[in-house]
Length: 364
Image (cartoon, helix red, strand yellow):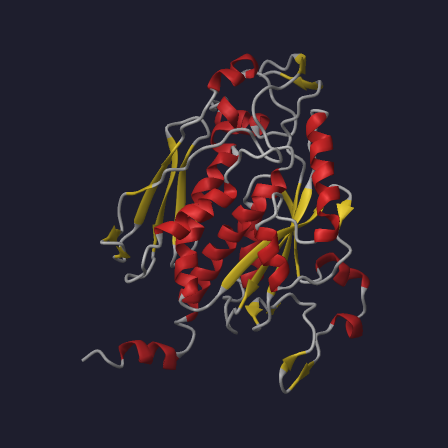
């Protein structure tokens, strides 16, 4: 399965070392202005090249090949292609028959019987550039409703922020951080943790906070297409993510009801333990999601594995990889969330008869 969504459906294609990565975004309404400066800035946020990320730096010169005319969406499917321009496939020729530990090599081989070993092929994080571009397009739709999505890193390895709440200024500052750190007080220690892992040939995990602001009440389609369940499903579909928490998440399991309930007064909710979602439907509060990434499995230390003939081998990888995949992964999470929220915005328009009548009231 290479697609997601109901009314706004996104399909991606391409491999890490193929000619490019692309996608089709269907269901986008007509009349949306395509802000090229914004699209390029979103791709730039995901791009590698810094000392805290992979040395592989792609320019990501996208081509929109359908669905846009004179800078405005037409309502037709938006097709796009982002060429791969900086591949080094020869780095993988020596290990083409070896299963890299904790990669998808093993499972892809036994599921399909034939795989693209260059950089992981379809299972590579390079595919996420298509999600970022599609998410950027849907952010242009969400902008019409003043819905904003922010992200930032809250922990790198064992270097964790002690803060429980983050605000608009924190998220804006995180955008300018080299590692998108939300908590300035631990940023330098988090950078040191990444460089320590990198310099030793190792990698380190991380956790990100995704915050969605100005979400209207009513998004989510119970019982089998709840907002929280679809957010979790699509986020877990991104490489390296191992856990999702919404609101207080795991902390809810060690509380009692009085501690966990969000009381209300005439002005609204007095707390947000639920993370902005009740019964699978948005309640108007900020939606807070914690996303936990495993360490990048591509490390440059000796490891034990087997090859496709089940021979035991010692392997030491080469190539260009992120020492902490969660850093750039946090940006991809924003886009995944944007795709889900945009789809839910359209789905919610049919939940009430009076809403449907408004659409057709001017049609004679």
